[in-house]
Length: 385
Image (cartoon, rainbow, N blue to C red; front, side, top):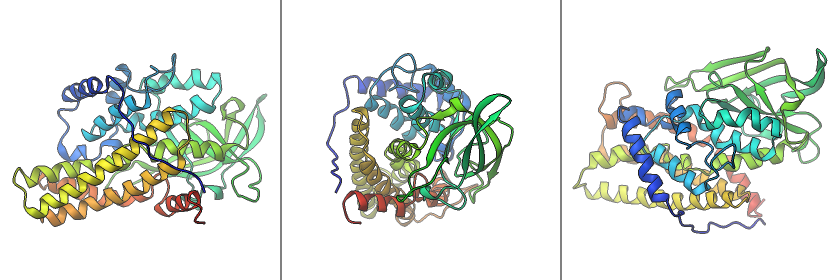
């Protein structure tokens, strides 16, 4: 059985001043964002906004110089939760800064760091995730997209064929870090995989946006037809992709986005309930606040472990699973308390936010690994299977 812990932690000195600075920035740069748009926050794509964050030094905060400013993961946490709580549009830089950059920093070469990290920290280079496949879903061990050694025009590298889905904003991204099969899976099914940085402007790459039921097109299918990837774009070592992906998912599964994606609706609920809420509203809001506070404490604990160089994959899975349950409960609770119907286009702010979150939260149990996968990870970690 794997040991796990959620030790309480204190925010570092200066966190309050940093929070005040971020709020002042948001008062100036995000003041005109309408309430319904704030519900979209981390899928809100705004290149100028991401660039301004880079100029303030708020991207790549935890990376050492010369790539970043060497601040703590808890300081970065303060910035992230303020951005999400305000409903700021963070999608342009989100994946690159949250997990692609840290992965390259940890497993990449000096050449890869020099080529890719400055643009990410500036909010000008965007990445998408290349893990899931059409016939694999969250079962990453069953991926079939391949990279085979090749030499093209005298340059050594790899030729990639296959497809990836759940590639958020691939149509706007410059690069994908793709998990590809380079050898036999072996008995545990986790062997024979390798990660590569793929330039999405390369010949043979086709990006097809897929419109979801809300009308958004952040979801894409990416097809690779004999795409050449230079040898220098292999991340880490050949065959170690599974271990690297596991480390990468700790960044993806434990952050404040795992319980603040529906925060705009909770704020709207509090506002509509008013200063003298009904007993039902007061009880519901109090219960949601207690759950939110607990999840935040757990997430902060994971951030502190990441800051210390640990790999809290089990703890991150707990945060992700419980965060999904929390967020998916908010629309029904809000509807019961207020009694208003969701209206996506021409309702009140509350009705429009309710409509968006009610539809969007269906996907929360899929992104970053399905609920079934998370509970399998937790069960194995606890020695229950």
